[in-house]
Amino acid sequence: MHTSKAEQIIALILSHRRRSKGGIQCPAAPCPNCMGPHLARLSRFIEDGIPVEFVLPAFPVKSPNLNKVLGPLPDKAEEIAVQFLDEICARIGQLYPPGARITICADGRVFGDLIGVPDGDVDSYQSAMATLLATVAPTTLRLFTLDDAAAGSTPEMLRRRLDQEFGESLTDLRQEVKQHTDTRTMYLGIVRFLVEDRMGPGHQGTRSALQRESRERAYGVVARSRAWGRLIGRHFPEAVRLSIHPQPCGSTKLGILLGETPDNWLTPWHSVAVLRRRGFVLMKRTDAEKVGAQLVFENGKPSHYLLREESPMIDERNAIDISRHEITAIEPFGVAIQPAEPGQQISDISVESLRSLVRKHHLVLLRGFDSFGNADELSTYCARWGTVSEWPFGTVLELVEHDDPEDHIFDHSYVPLHWDGMYREQVPEFQVFHCVTAPGRHDGGETMFSNTTEVLAHADSETVALWSKVTGTYRRKMEYYDSVTVSPIVTAHPDHDTPVIRYNEPTDAADTDFVNHPDLEFSGLPDDLLAQVHSSLRAALHDRAHRYSHAWQSGDLVIADNYTLLHGRNAFTSHAGRHLRRVHVLGDPPLDNPGLLR
Image (cartoon, rainbow, N blue to C red; front, side, top):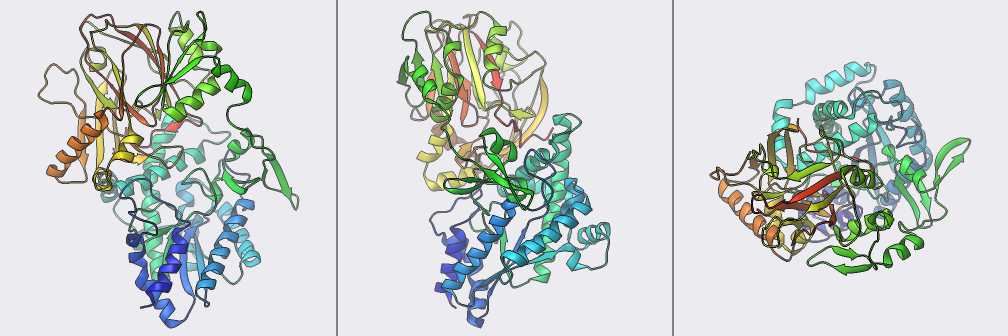
């Protein structure tokens, strides 16, 4: 077989790959595991001396959310993606003269009823895409739609026939989502998009209701996507399969990015093109406008945005503002800030400066400042950081020992490592803790923070691969919620590709003094290997190279990165007077809980 030439072609595709953030990661680049499933198929084209055929299910229809896109028709975002695919074919032609062709399997008709887009909008988008391909890449790209599979049928008949001939059991799919990390990752990404697409201007109804509906519809999207894939396989049995979804190591599909983007899931039909000094990048429309990009028209129609000047997140004034104070590193991570002189107010420090420090160092301690006289003052300050989470009790949780606690957070016991918001509709980016009264020096009660990015960076690849196979299902009932959430242990930071750990440390079921044990279930490996996972994970999370235990002093303010860290609490002496206040601040945009089932 012509494996050398085939390997070169696959390596070219993999250089633009859309990586899966969970699951098993590639041991090398280019990865032999990722090349393996495609070598024989590619080699057959080369042996016959004919163009390599690829299929790419993509370009369905524009998102209906005008906070993300300019309108219902293809624009510069699609144009640069088509140019990119045409360039890929040209570069393959330099390696292999017969070249390559890509059939874009536009699937707007497939999903229109599930994503809430009228078939008329699908018609307009498909027609405009056909014109774009004929103009930009007439010899390398072509369009295939569900309409082509059964000409003359209505959209409803087409979708019904697709489900009947190629569909699968939603019951089996639900079980697969629970048990398999890669399926779960794809499902959660689709839930996120379904919520975002309906949360545009004019949306009526609550976000929580929309999230519940989207979690249900996402199963239909996954099932329909697979049915569409099977139909494509029937029509193009020899073609090499590309995908716009992130793919795990060794997948039978090659995940491919269609443009530079800060988000591994962002696509041209969910974004706008923004022209910067370094070229085009895909962004959500509101994000482009937020950084001052200007709308550009071509042929009288909105086309893309132009960002003339890219300014840093922290301006010079803010940098000077924070540098007036004493800033020292905390081991093994975080920074501590103390006032340059007595009487300084926390509220005088630039929130932008502090936010940047937390995102970079994951934890910031402010000690020695005049802080907050009551809970209302703390809540008002936190509102400067962003949207503050609302709870049945308000925005400020009083963490103080109860005489007859109904949950362990109100007891004086150890609290296992976990992440906040795991049982809520939205996961906060920042936790703000204010110490009203500290326990005695030898009374315990330290808050523990574990840096999960460092845990993963220092673990060997075999251990990370083992952890990546496990998914946790967490159930907890207390005064403020009765919820179930599911998450792979190794997943991705919601704002970038950095792997993080989402894990609720198991409690000892035999410990009858522990109040309100959570119900935890872990799947993906046999019991003996699960025990190994828990043992190695606990050792790594509590290793002093990764864990910081904060001994409280009255007046301390700690701001922590909830997207990256896990946190817990050491037990403390009963009636030691430990009193903290905690506020959750949501990210921008808020992170809808990807794993919440109810």
